[in-house]
Length: 222
Ligand SMILES: CC(C)(COP(=O)(O)OP(=O)(O)OC[C@H]1O[C@@H](n2cnc3c(N)ncnc32)[C@H](O)[C@@H]1OP(=O)(O)O)[C@@H](O)C(=O)NCCC(=O)NCCS
Image 1 (tube, helix red, strand yellow):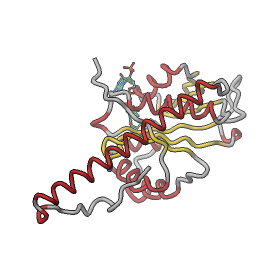
Image 2 (spheres, rainbow, N blue to C red):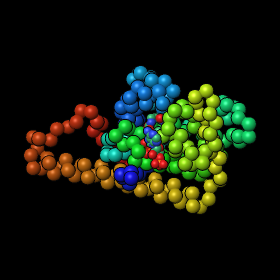
Image 3 (spheres, rainbow, N blue to C red):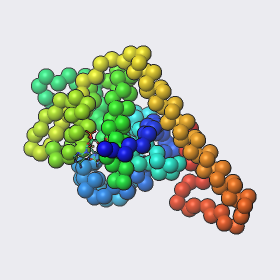
Image 4 (tube, helix red, strand yellow):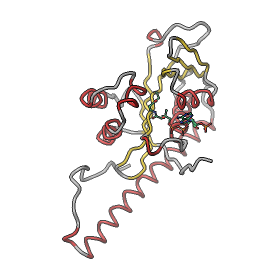
């Protein structure tokens, strides 16, 4: 049985960019190939992160702690003409979903939850088709796609998956809103807890408080 933690999914923004970069740089070359279609070198990963346009796309993340982003789902809204023309697929409002989970956090449902959140976000924004592209050998991604009921088209070792979504309703709005609130609260509490611990340590022995040079002084606040 899976040992699944409670997973809070947050919508990410500009201030999360450094943590996204850390997450993607932590992926092995083979994971980068699965995620980006090629084993991108660090500079290309960095360019990808810098180019994410938060005003156009939506990015979701799972923080394990204030600084450690362990899962990222990127929902890119697409021009339907850029998709492979597959018979019978309705592709008038489409978003492509790409996802990665840090190796130590795999098989704990994080990928599935990111996918579910992306699907509900699409519904609430009148996107009627959620699209994925991956290698046919990518078992976990195919498992997520099949569980969600995606239509899968396999061709030359690659997969295109399409999920047709209904329109929004009061329950879909309520669910996304509740998930975002819970994640923001969790994140804020984690940050406050960390600050409180640092403050207490400082009180007890000020000389032992070392500021980390790896992290921004102020983590994102939500
Ligand atoms: C794909 C990926 C995001 C899945 O993340 P995850 O958090 O491990 O996924 P989940 O825990 O939600 O597991 C999803 C399903 O896949 C199954 N699964 C996970 N790893 C598996 C494996 N190696 N072989 C077979 N099935 C596997 C799980 O059992 C689960 O099925 P279940 O709910 O029926 O038990 C993660 O493996 C990853 O980051 N891979 C590298 C990047 C990538 O491939 N991205 C996808 C292309 S965009």
